[in-house]
Image (cartoon, rainbow over all chains, first blue to last red; front, side, top):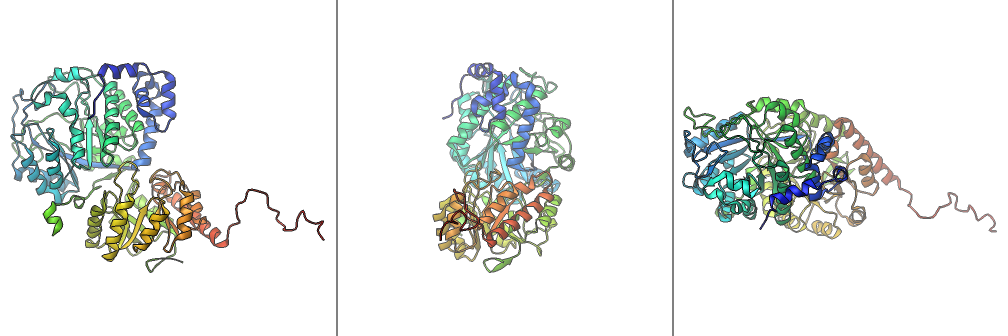
Length: 373
Length: 255
């Protein structure tokens, strides 16, 4: 099982970085965890342009001049957890709803018509409302109409992930939110999510179940981002070693000061976010990196080609937000509200191809019975 | 002229469709390369859909499409993709890629052999992508592979032919065409493979991400031709000691 060092130990490792460590990490090929600490340190900040250039080179080499496009479908805003920072927190009095199968299908098909082939199915963590049976049925209804279906829902057991994989789910994203146990306790007030270790072990369970791809991430704004970056690197390296068949991705959800009542405990500036993205790209040239519509258009356009490989567009974070007149409340306000066509045009203007399909439903076996037929 | 599974090819350079900045750049680069066979990832294109962003810019009369099973983790998945390719009009040509490690994309020899045996029986013309393992290459030929495609170095690395010694053995023993695939980062690498006696090379990344993919495609075409011509002309042997250019030089005292 993956265990993360004490957060203060991660911070100490970064504080010990010397100028020559930064220079050697910028020159090296496989920089290792020491190199990652160096590139996350304040001493690396003056070298941000060099980091950007190195990250761009590695991204182009591994992924070519392409960016994969996706969109989220919010299935439900019910949540059994009380998380201080989240719009769906059980404490909040928002208009909650869970989509029926037909509604979820309709939402997905709106995105299909807009040109999306990769969907991310998202829900609050309320197993009684959105359980494995529900997700399985949605996957079965959508699987043949989309290239790939991912989920970002409550942590599940290995057997449950295996069921969803057979139903057509290709990948699982589950964010630790913060790798700092103290802060984790402070912001996760109640619910299953309050168990730090159960959540930490979730990506491994998804990988063990055979998922194609597993995504991890930290909610930026809760704790020291440099140490979060180092923890993400350790988590990635551990997953690579133990689940070599699984593709890995990292997301960088950044809390914005303007958003909701919760003020980020440790604000993360665009420069910091960029440094973190460059550092992780250089640390792991093959990892898929997401940059969602949480970030503003100007920033997302600027980052094209510098590390991120997955972009969303036209996202709505409320269940039913694409087509239903009475959509529920949203999880957070997006920073980039451009359509798929507009984001694609920006990507093309930078000399990159916005790829809409880079998977196929046929990869997933349709269950043993159909396979034998 | 190069013949694979009964089909003749004037160009010994094969192209790919991944990693290009746009479908238009891809079309121009492929045209400049002069290639006649192009591999397309089944995960990426919708073969049966003429409006697909890649399909719509490529002329099926001009190129033989070689669908590939990129993304398959085992024989079963690769076979399922092959069936999909056939059902959507991809024909019986198949570049078999079984790459369970999504990081290095190195091919799984066991699953590749298994899938080749089954697909050949089903009538596919199978071109398996393999590590440069001479025994595996022989086993695949025994199983009926139409060609073998050993890698020069891991895909996308532009490292050139790091497997030179094994590729030389594969070429020496081959009963089917040998296509060096993956890792060729510069025209000189392609020329090297051709000088060694490879029947063809497949180049994608080095062209797709070049500063000017169209000119780079032309450069690769010239390198492949130069390398092949040199091979056919008969290269001089590389030797450690200096060899006199006139056989009797230095021996003038002999009577």
